[in-house]
Length: 196
Image (cartoon, rainbow, N blue to C red; front, side, top):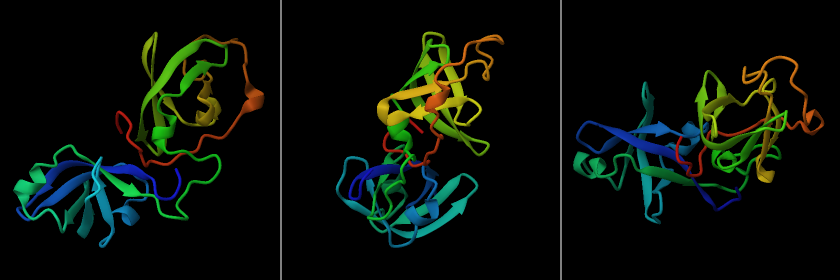
């Protein structure tokens, strides 16, 4: 992502009260920054800004009220909408880091060479990002941790995992491309996945 581009940072999941306050599912690891009073978000595909006037975390995510959403009726029309933020100069990711949407669509193989499918979703569980890989054997949840992911190069469309570490095959499987190890790194911000 470069400065000026937009990426999805939240999804409207519910409402709170009658003044248009919305409950947002945070899809970013920078929630305090993205939902700060005075910041602008955009409905996906829209150029009209939504200006944050109240914001606080709650048990379900964040409660946020926008100046442009005057009441609950207006808020209800936005149920399940994705909200985007503009990437500001200096917010670009470091080398080796990726937004979730940049990982979705990458092909995934085992170190033994067998194709497992492609990444169709990512979610966070217990402090680790988890890829959902869909392929010939159905869906597989693959944690983005070093002991499982041997090659993590989504810009090349290449992710190689150790199927033995996930219990996909018995002991004694051949090693694969261990010389091409790149550390998994990412950001919870999503740029429109079939989401998260």
